[in-house]
Amino acid sequence: MEIKGVIDLSFVDWDGKTSSVFFLPNCNFRCPYCHNVALVLHPETGETTPFERVEDYLKKHRTWIDGICITGGEPTLHNNLPDLCLKMKEMGFLVKLDTNGSNPMMVKALIEKELVDYVAMDIKAPLTAEKYSKAIGVNAEKLLEKVKKTIELLLGSKIDYEFRTTVVPTLHEEKDIEEICCSIKDCKKYVLQKFDISVGKETLDPNFSKLKPYTDKEMEMFLMTAEKLLPNVKLR
Image 1 (cartoon, rainbow, N blue to C red):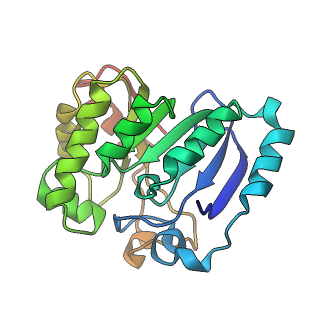
Image 2 (cartoon, rainbow, N blue to C red):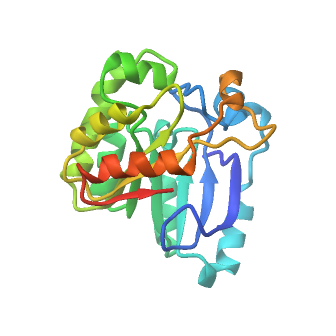
Image 3 (cartoon, rainbow, N blue to C red):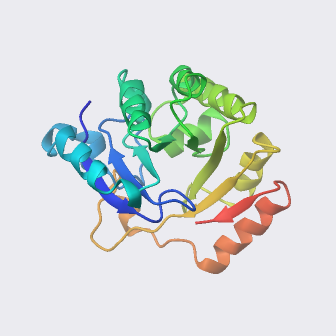
């Protein structure tokens, strides 16, 4: 398992918990607003973090870290993801998985084997092929069925999870948030994330690096829209 980046200690990647964050390479989506350009398009150019270095750090700082966030890229593309999760569990850490939901069989296996404690799934757009294709930068016809299966899996699961949408100008309007909310009725948690690219930061589609993000007031309006339809909605 190649780890292409590590945040040793994070206070923001898992609500209420301290964590280390592992970045795994490759992704089957090409979201135009994605800022992990090298990780998605050219993972071979990035330095691989030796697992021994990661393991040594975790052992030394065990009392500071509650869990491990595994993100990407798309972690579920890696067949040996369960091995990494098992190793973290054996070391005594909680495990959080970030996923785009395109591999429901992997997510199901991780949950059934109790190898993850929390799943954060991105819902990129309303669940139509046209809108999803635009949001993920590839044809969503077949992928969308897998995304829907993962949504159903999490809705019916006892595991802690959240659905989340990065709200991007040109991709999302109020009606889109309404449609997404209607597809995840009674979910445990829905998070609206503000798209905001730092100056000079790359995006897969360079035009998105120039986009003016929604204002805080506009994000509050999206929040109010979602709160009318779902019991637990947060801004991030």
